[in-house]
Amino acid sequence: MHLIIIANPYSGGGNGKKQFDCLVNYCLKNNITFSTYLTQYAGEMIEIIPRIIQNLTSEHKIIIIGGDGTLNEAISALIQCNQKIPVAYLPAGTGNDFAREMILTHDITTFIKHLYNETIKNLEIISYHEKMSHKKGIAINSLGFGIDAAICQLNTVQAKSQKKRFGLNKLSYLTPIIDAFKNHQEFQASIQVDDEPVQIADKNLLVGLFNHSYFGGGIQFVPTAKQNSHHFEVVVARDVTTKVILKAFPFILWNKQHFERFPNHLMKQTATKACIKIQQPILMQTDGEVTSFEAVDLEAELMTYPIYLT
Image (cartoon, rainbow, N blue to C red):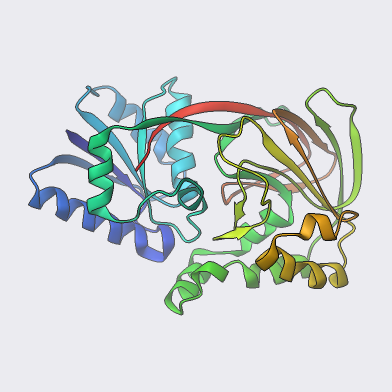
């Protein structure tokens, strides 16, 4: 077995570098051969992956170290290269929501043990195509327009590092949530779920597609969404005032009944495909990474990608 280790050293406020060093030291002590690549900037995967796949054999295993955005970038690059090569993921982000949903280990010894077992699962992910910009991509956890994208934009590396250092990693999104809500702008969206009639939703705070329940480092925002359930959840949060968000927040954090308690403000539907149109400038987040659009005409559906269960 030869490991090809691709790590984002900046993920999780430096946790990516720590996990990378631990894995390299383990390989050296246990005579496991390996090659390493440390990314230096967002988007570098599309330069690294084509070089790697040229000489791959059955002995090689690709390891991704970083946060959910790093994993997204790696799988996206492989898909762009028309590959479905299995990858293994060693979590090292701030939120680690994908690892939490899939119950993946952070421990190096356990990780290597599981890797030797070679248990591969076809992972269901959301594939999207934004027609106006011709942008294509994937979302492993979620894709969202509105406040969740604003939260991700505000939740900077520096802020993550400070909250992690003070033991507030799970609540690292609380301050950005407050700041994003203070500055939010409502928007209108046209939404079609599967082959149902188009719905027009106004006064929106959020329109999102959720592939599992977690968002923001362990917050179960959509409790009914489950990975590999053969569908995703289309979620709309609308007409949300300060009074509503203050009332809803304890339910979101603790008893997970916010959709039942606030049906006029929080709505969800299951889907295997969805279309979203927004006629104004807006931010979109995919697995915590943010993109801006002047307007949106987006189609999304499920696809699969193989991953080692570690």
